[in-house]
Length: 226
Length: 245
Image (cartoon, rainbow over all chains, first blue to last red; front, side, top):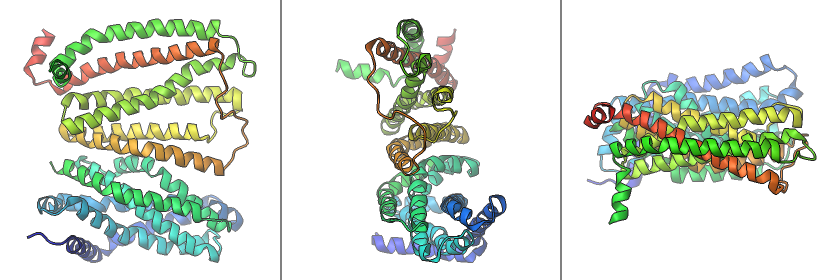
């Protein structure tokens, strides 16, 4: 029986959410990692708020990128090991669509919480209160794009024995545009400038990611399953 | 019909092996010849630049290396796509042979750029968009080679790295564009001529010839690497025995 696409997405998302909430440590680890990275910068750079404020976009975005790389490890690996991805591929449903649903869930569990927690780190970095909404918005949108790009490299590294460093090596160059526009949006928000254009560019990258990344991720996962 | 049989030969490892063995010395010889003429033209015949004096002669190594670094990436991606679409083993071997050469040309472009930057800009490195994009390109090459080395199974490694090369091709223009945008925001204080100044023909022809020489050199090295790659991949095939004895 062929289920409707929305049913498929709902099932995949519900499954992944249920699994994630049964293992809360996996959920919290990237968040804690992000907070620790954000704490290290004042300790190493300077405790002076005015100088930290200049560095804040960089700290937030590098932290978000590193933490999303950490979370990417959990995106496909376990499901590939226990055969779930094979069942996905054999189910007769569109693998592209299922992986897209999976990637969205991954963002719900890593990118979105990180964006919501970012203000705590941002306060410590001297980001003014009125800039918080745009910091959250840019990190949430950028995190979505990072999850999509990351899904490709996570799929590609399925065949490799050790994912870790290789995953970062593949993802980081591809993530350069997201980092550039994301950090710029945050920077503009902090100095009270116009953060609309970089945020829109970030949105454009996310849209491009939605259209192309799931296709590439599905092809990559198929290669890994062969 | 005749053209198709010609095309299909490139799918056959023994034929390509023989082709590579026959042609590599010719490409290598032509590269050497062009390189010597271009060097003489560039270092002796071309007049010194009115602004940069003799230091401008670095361009004869730097610019062709930078062009080649991009051209080889494109070659690699096209070969990877051919391998992915038509499932040609030889195409994957070509892509695999391209990557280290491309990475070295990228290193050469960056290295000569740094040496050139010191006397011209007063610093080995500035975060200029072209330099940054070239550096990211180097990381892409590293990622490609890392992925290839990380996957044990040959067929899987071929396909996965081919996917990465194709994804990279879509992303390279976006990276380039975003890096340029990023640089225009953080305007640096370097005095640089971003527009290409008109070049005198005496200066230009050695540059173009050097580009041809580098391309021929790439072809020669690619064919040699391709032979090694084919020998490694087809080590259990019977034609290897015939070729090597």
